[in-house]
Amino acid sequence: GENVEQHPSTLSVQEGDSAVIKCTYSDSASNYFPWYKQELGKRPQLIIDIRSNVGEKKDQRIAVTLNKTAKHFSLHITETQPEDSAVYFCAASINTPLVFGKGTRLSVIA
Amino acid sequence: GAGVSQSPSNKVTEKGKDVELRCDPISGHTALYWYRQSLGQGLEFLIYFQGNSAPDKSGLPSDRFSAERTGGSVSTLTIQRTQQEDSAVYLCASRLTGTANQPQHFGDGTRLSIL
Image 1 (tube, rainbow over the protein chains, first blue to last red):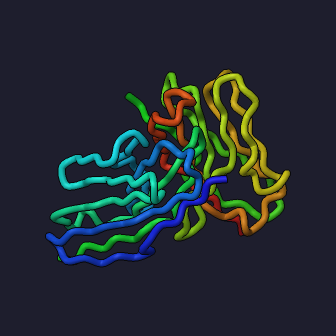
Image 2: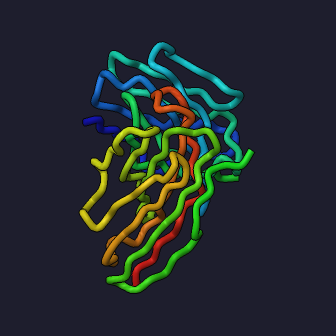
């Protein structure tokens, strides 16, 4: 079955700097790659997703890139703000259900 | 509109007791998923319902865990003879269709604590 690896497990950045989180997946048939943000004690919230027929997608300060050949995808957050502090999860899916990475705890230091 | 609703939000019970957790998906969503999230960990898939099809139970950790979905809407996850290792947040998610490229929307979860 699908296996998703996520790095780093923790990440600290200064406010205004960029943050990058990387994920790799094992099954080349996976075709859907969402990213979720989970604040402490709250539900995971979808922040961006990408389909396998697209290499890059951007939404304001957030972007995701996908390299199908290498089977990896990345989340990029620019101009980080304290409210970006949370745990971020990547996931991959062939159909359903989603297989999640173990998460990255992002801390944005003011 | 209303999102995914889960109840109770917190449940504390003694080891060996049975518990039932409820999930009310977004109206019209045909796919429903249960995940488990242990403290500081990722999301572990438990079970998946899609319309009237037989559920995918491949993620259930033991036969103490079961789930049903009545009328294609509300789902109940039951854990029998609870153990301390069952302590976790149980998250439910729903999706508009079973197609991969539709986003899953999560509820707030039920925090289960086994004493």
